[in-house]
Image (cartoon, rainbow, N blue to C red; front, top):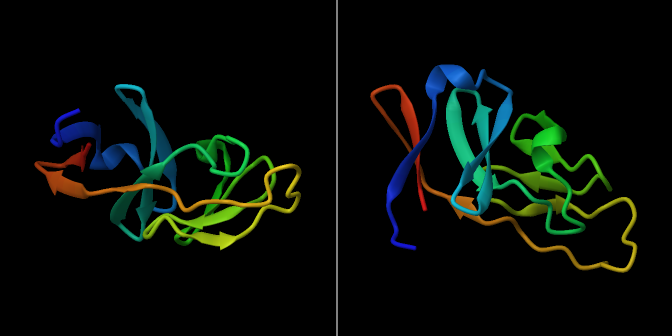
Length: 110
């Protein structure tokens, strides 16, 4: 897929401290509003595939609703491992996407 910016939402669609899942092609992306700044990371937990959009956002940290792994939505980095490692003790960082605001639209580079 060619690298380009795609409109995924309007800035008024995601309140401060909230997040929203969007789909671009076959990629599920989590858009998070942290103090008025928007960040985009993969929406699927790298531990066991939980939907991070159903988790809890506290500041810039999202907690997976399945096994409680925590990620920084700014960097995509793992902040703490899952509560239950199960058969997948390793957990990877989330991919991040460049975000820009243009005419009150949220665009991400794919």
